[in-house]
Image: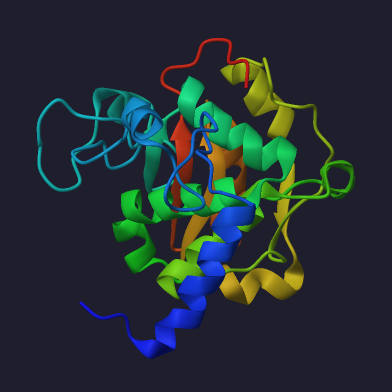
Length: 253
């Protein structure tokens, strides 16, 4: 097949870039054919969360239990949000991607994470009216200079053509880092930490909101955000994360 003439400049530029700065696996650093990607070994090492899953918690089922099926955990302790999905289980391989985006500002990791999240959360994206990231407190944002959840929300908006807003949900109280806290400690830590700006109420009132975060551990942060959103009149709140920590007792992330 002949290459269209219009595509030649882009291909030539891509070839020059690859020659100067070859694409490397985001997991192990091995050479790969495409930027913002993983090698076959690292991709295969990821624990993908494909259907069937619990509609509320996004945890995997051993077999298909039907549309909207809920796990025993979701029935015994229902989350405040309505639906959730995650792309992968949090482990050593997925953790490298999370840390590359969160602590090293490597946006190419976020591009890959967003693509995977869009696939896992395609049904949530299809029904969402607006995408909101889990916000950082202004002092934490100043320290990090970067909100990884906002970057993921922006990329998901670009992929799905669903609008996103970074100025609606805000963190009004500075909290301890959640790393190392158990579920009860995390819930106490983020209680009342989130509010909506008055000018942002119209963006969520009566709407289906998709809340985006990089990792869901105990769900305490997502519950605090959901509580604020539903108090403001959101009709439904769904949660989309890149990685899910399975049954954490004393999480260290």
